[in-house]
Image 1 (cartoon, rainbow, N blue to C red):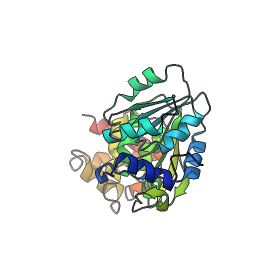
Image 2 (cartoon, rainbow, N blue to C red):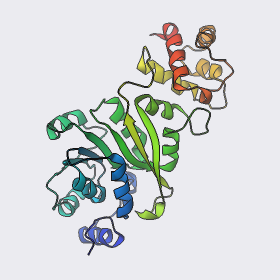
Image 3 (cartoon, rainbow, N blue to C red):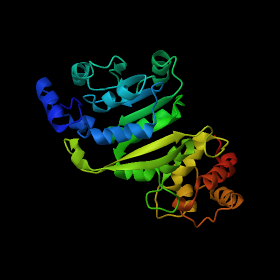
Image 4 (cartoon, rainbow, N blue to C red):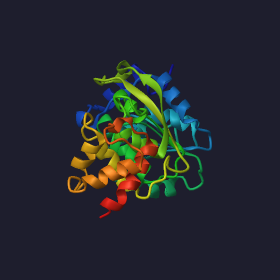
Length: 293
């Protein structure tokens, strides 16, 4: 008999045993396909010496596969109701630690120092709740965690935005923010039929491999991201119009914006979606002297 958690029958039995009901507000969708879970873990390229950090373990379906292939799993679960279920389903695995905390508020670096003191290879592997996917990924990257990368399941549309190239419809400030820190690839498309309850959209698995250095060198990271966000504020507008209307005191400093665009070798009539990371880096550095607070 297959003992894996991620089968329709076993998942249903676990939920019934504990009288668990799904909370829509927490974006809970549990995977019921072991093959897909195994492929997700494959993409993380874990070894028996690796550590895995999971976010939103649910009833432990992915946690179980991670525990089988790594030295230790640390999972953050916000829903207190799932703690007794996880204690039950993961009882066979002594290498799993569950922290009942919102990962967005957690001190992940402190948790890593405590739980993975002797482990050098760390990966985040997660089926992320769709309503907070972007804030979670950005926190993991901005906190400069000592991880090799992230393999996570998220909404297919968000995955497309994360790995998009300049000039495509999906390309935007999110693509730039994530590609600044990582090499981003969509590695799998996952149909909605393998979840309980079924989400309204298809999912995708992305792999983000952390770069040793950011993809481009900029004088001021925060300002670089301010410029990229401003450049996509209204996609149909030219970069000059977006920067003029979105940057603080942009209207007063329009001549400086034109000057900076020329200095960076960017036509003011171009749209933000046509610029690559290198061009945005040159532009942010050219604008900085005129907008430094």
